[in-house]
Image 1: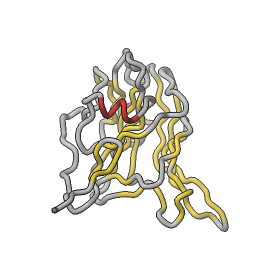
Image 2 (image 1 turned 120 degrees about the vertical axis):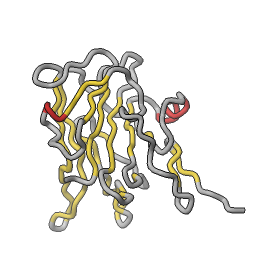
Image 3 (image 1 turned 45 degrees about the horizontal axis):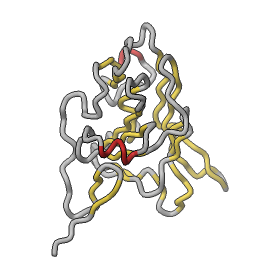
Length: 189
């Protein structure tokens, strides 16, 4: 299974704020960049989004890549603690059909290539779950195949919160902690 997966998609947002959620499916923190080559960024193909250097997902952590400015989404009060907010998306998500892929840069010979870790080609027609306005397309099982319609369900509402109400990963006070779209460090003094 890939370490990071596309876990939820809101493409038909009534308020205009579309988003894609990615989830770290491992029990360890994961960098979405190469510290030795900060120009080697992970990407979300289909919307031409390049993750900025320095983005790390905690073990089991999530990040939202939104169409709006991250600060506005953070200040909306709807983002659970521990969820990183990134964006804005350069291109909008299509409501009816779209191909999204999560890519990781990899050394290839003397250059770089992008390897696809996860891919979702979704539709808004059978056999895919039908989504009304503000319905979130949610992956039923993180380990399931991304483009398999049976592995997705449509959930009402456009909430940023996890569909099962699960809290984010525990806050590790010895490390930088994601607070929406910025990091905070504990000052023990």
